[in-house]
Image 1 (spheres, rainbow, N blue to C red):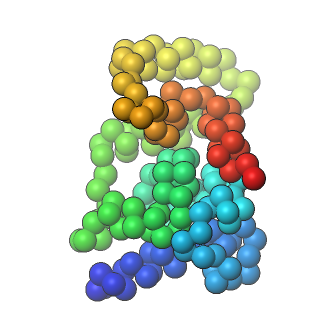
Image 2: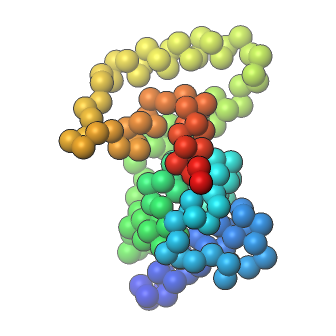
Length: 163
C-alpha cells in the first residue's frame, strides 16, 4: 500500500488498541498527539497495550513503549520505521532469542524451585555484560529498564503516569 496509507493504517491501529485498553467504544476518543499519560494510561494499561500491539504487529515491543514513544502518532512513526518500507520487520537475532527466553521464564510457576537458580544465573550473565554508561544527560528509559526488576518497572511506570 502507498506510504501515506500505511501511516494512517498504523496510526489508526495504535489508536484503536489504545481505545480498547482504556475502555472507549471508539478510537475517535483517542487524540493521536495526546500523550498516553494524558489519555489515562497506568502501568497495567501500558503492559496490556504493549501486548495487544505486539500481537497485532508481530513485533517484540518493550514494556516501556508508551514512555519511549509517548503519543500514538510517535508510536505509529516508530512502528513504521521498525517495519520498514518493504513491510517486513527488522528483527534483531538477540531480541528474538530473548523473547523466547522471556516466554519460557514467564511460564515457570511462582513456587518453582528453578526460579531462584534461573534468577541467579541471569544475574551472573548480566554482570558479565558490564555496566552501562549513562547517557550524557543521565540515564534514559531503556537503560533504567534494562537492569530493573519487574516490580521496579511497574513502579517506574506508575511514577511516569502519576497525575
